[in-house]
Image (cartoon, rainbow, N blue to C red; front, side, top):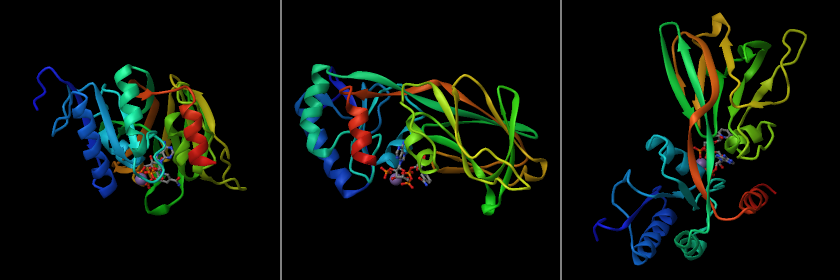
Length: 270
Ligand code: NAP
Ligand code: MN
């Protein structure tokens, strides 16, 4: 079948057997309803269906450069917090999709501008952007919020998490769960040191997404910083400062009912 006149849906699957099986079944059912599922990712599609776990979702978003096409996820992975549909519910999902029984909700992204001695780079994260030390060394970081000096942090590092990412690394590190529609960023310490020598905040801070957060590594540590974006490591030479804010760019996903978030949270964490 060609895409001529058909509504296009991308089906993106990881390579697990369960995902491939689910993808094949899904493609069959979508085709039967008159949708066209292209072999390769099509930027003209109306929907991206991602099959796998959260890792598969995160990699898809990065690979296709934070597309405007809304996402929906089918979970064949481990936790699948972003992947709210189960393979057994495919029929119900297609039915609701065709009837338009859904809303589209935004997923806020965290942006980091990394300034080095002679360059700057921009990073975007769905879950979080973490600053850590290379070789598991303690890092010493000056933290500013809206240009106000907050603290000199010493410890394993700092997570800056989005609301959607708040249930990931942030949550395991003692951070709070933030409802995804709140436009906020959460700064969560990783093993903060609080001793006679160093004094770091032990808990998270949650601030509005348009207030800039700036982190400056101490001079001696400019070359010892590791930046981890949604689980992927980046290294830069001579980092002077990293400025964070919520990106103007967002991605979006389908929400099929108002209880979906809470059901998902309860079934996956409690
Ligand atoms: P991974 O090592 O498989 O991820 C660790 C776990 O986090 C997986 O169970 C993953 O779900 C889950 N996860 C990812 N995003 C989540 C979210 N927004 N809410 C709740 N759980 C979430 O690596 P990955 O699959 O590539 O995912 C990268 C993410 O892992 C990072 O962005 C970070 O949030 C998280 N992480 C967590 C820790 C920790 O908790 N100590 C440490 C490093 C990284 P799936 O099983 O469905 O993939
Ligand atoms: Mn994973």
